[in-house]
Length: 395
Image 1 (cartoon, one colour):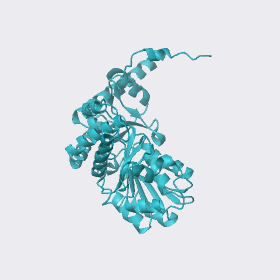
Image 2 (image 1 turned 180 degrees about the horizontal axis):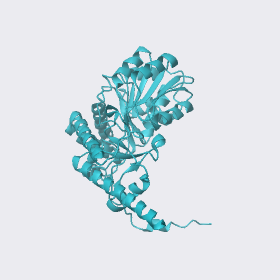
Image 3 (image 1 turned 135 degrees about the vertical axis):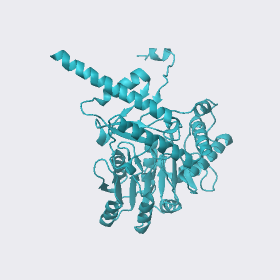
Image 4 (image 1 turned 60 degrees about the horizontal axis):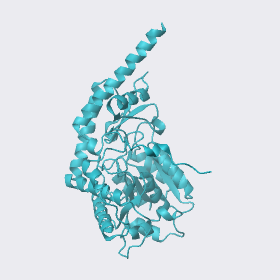
């Protein structure tokens, strides 16, 4: 039997233009899109390696670190989570998960597969962890690794006090892993000053780059631990000693590890260049101003933020309670159908409970905030009106 070529591939490719204001990805700038149309380079070509070096310097800036072991994992944000845990964990290590949403549970699933003895400290629904809760969990479980998400995109919760958590980890000889996939650029993060051992972020969120490369950095302390492991990391692809050698992190000749996407590198390089030109403090300020305006608008519409304690609200992914009697999916479908605007529903513990509105990168502007508020209100009122008409038709 011969399998014929698919008819669908005879059609011209069509990609609609959409405004991506969900939890990510965000829209890429024209500068990033044009960069990705450059010719493909070989993964060991000197020009490609030079771009990798430039990307590495940009990552050090956005993380505020001088770590040599700073690079990208070829993969989505999950690959950063995998790499962090894969390299730090050995069999039977106690790994404590700080839970403020779905991502702590996802990390726990990964850690268990690497042989960890997983424990939890979980915040109550809709709030961040307190330092007292974390301290009590450290005294109880005595972890070797502590994982926490600075900004959980499933709940819109911002976990503050990372600096104090870093001090606590040093006191307990514990390695601190911080997921900043959704938070970086929307709130302050100082990797070295806060004594964070591993941090990773997403290229497709506030950076406004293409998905597929995950910036990550390991402290000298973490790197020493990895070099002294009793056994090699369980996944070759995530072995940071091998990836770091390809990225030129250790002062040794570069060697092939995998074939990196040069076109994704171009996009990330330009996204980082744009971010650095604006300046970290101004980027954070812009994202916070946009979130403040959105929160004020939500209140004026008679809606309610999901996270009750204002300082615990993540500026980049804002969660709004779905009004009683309103189908969130119909609201999201209305916005997409009429305006090509993405508004997302909840994830994990917030499914069917919240709308998630992303204010990241190109979409973190006051004009976009006003637009999404107007469309959200219009969509909700339209859905409510249809429900009333449906009820009347039954009478």
